[in-house]
Image 1: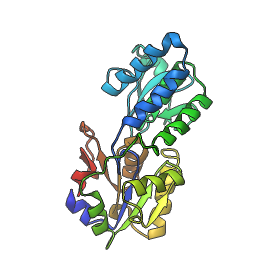
Image 2 (image 1 turned 90 degrees about the vertical axis):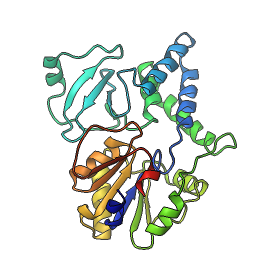
Image 3 (image 1 turned 45 degrees about the horizontal axis):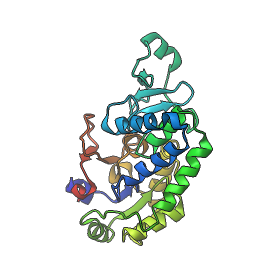
Image 4 (image 1 turned 180 degrees about the vertical axis):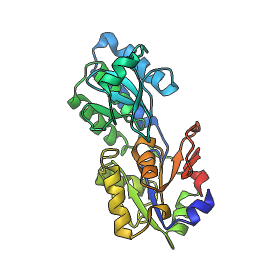
Length: 275
């Protein structure tokens, strides 16, 4: 693992779930959405979310949510082919219907097909299923962001991360590529004491829809071949699969392990194990 990092010229980091691994803010986001749901289903609402986190629900991180059909889709992350679809109660779509409804490569669009790449999306999908609006989710998301800058919330620093980045910065290009807005990024980096350690920051990257475009721009700017770059993140759909398809190396942060085998893929339980 350390040889991969040391032999690379460009390291591209995700932010949420990568440079910090706290998850309390996802629960807070879900509670805010739960309060906006009809009182008769509020318990059911949060119970569904808890089951998702425990892997006891068709919706899970790594799946794709079909907003139109209210279905949880299993998608091969490298071919983007839908291999299974399940209703909220776990009932699976028949093979013939599956091929008819999802005949080719799935295109993530943030409108119908929602890539559930990290913990932010579980409350969102729950809200969509139980009839909340996009405005509800946006208001709750912004309120959660305010919560994250309050005295009630604090981030856990990954042991040794700051020192490792300071050392790597001396002879490697360090880039931060995230879906978070720039003001949030700068605030989080300051709180994590990681501000000033990246040569460039790419906020609002619209991963996974624009992942390949942004990665291509980064490689071009630094004039670095894909095999000399590493994409590091906790979201397989957003930053790992696209990087592998482009020939980059990838470090996937996944505490529960991952079964997919790929020559350019390394799986670690936490970023602390990457250096």
